[in-house]
Length: 101
Image (cartoon, rainbow, N blue to C red; front, side, top):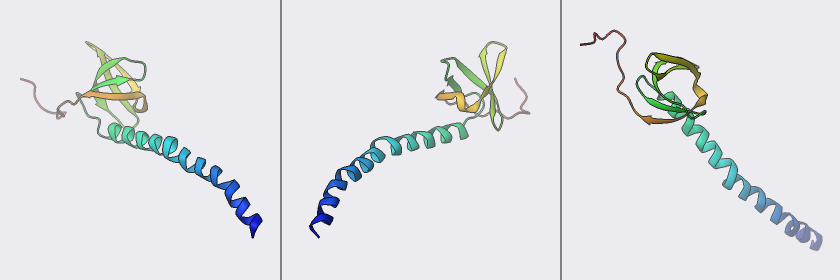
């Protein structure tokens, strides 16, 4: 019985490190990934976004996996949704068939 207690005492620090590793590294990263997916799911037209390259633009079109982003007047580029790192300003969703006044 004495050797069993010694083995448990030797394994306790390793188990503690695994639990600490989970709560300090893995869990926060999973939370950030979930928040990023939620942000991308809520993306809509006229949102101002920041791309992973640092370019700031306005969302013009949202598709399943890609987004059309206007980076300058009349210059629209197609961007993979995952490359959007931040939504700076929320835009009002505009209907596709509204007449402009």
